[in-house]
View (tube, helix red, strand yellow):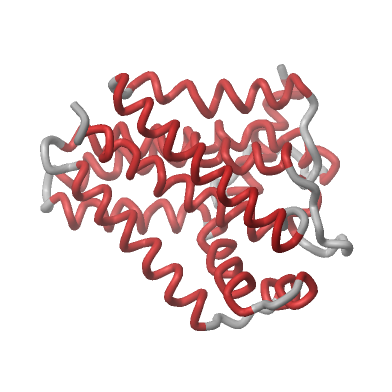
Length: 256
């Protein structure tokens, strides 16, 4: 049990800004198995997002509550995944070959593709959540709590499906860029899918279908352009899968 707690807190400390207990000493060798707990980290982020939205919605209009909740989760994660998405937009948008794409993604400067991409991504997520809140605030809270673990599961599936393509070991994500053993992947699946049980059957189907389509399309794109993935592409997958989950729930409403 102590070993599993260490792995969870290692993942929590790596993927968020949340302080971890002092007895969990930093050990880079724990990062690879700790990736199994990435969807469970999504439980924490999703719970904070849902609770903060409900709290803000008691005092403010739903649209403002959505924006403030999103801002809080960005702060909570240190914009870890958003930064990856922005870098992926720059690299895939501006690079012509594999070497150029990887070089652009490693560049800390923000290009036009990154600026436009992250602006549209945040806007799309905000609008989708606002639409989910038209009927009641609980729908937004449940969508947030389901989407964060599911979208992180999509990133874990990418790790399982494709090879890591950076040759150097300097990237922060290199330590988690290895396939999980069967037990670890099973744990990630359970943690990523279980919160969907809070949704209605049609919403579950919509969220799963939209997230699966987005994940498969991204995996195909990454394989075609680079032959695999990088840490930035994992962040991009999480962001797009999260948006796909919201859109899938909204689409399901049109068929019920």
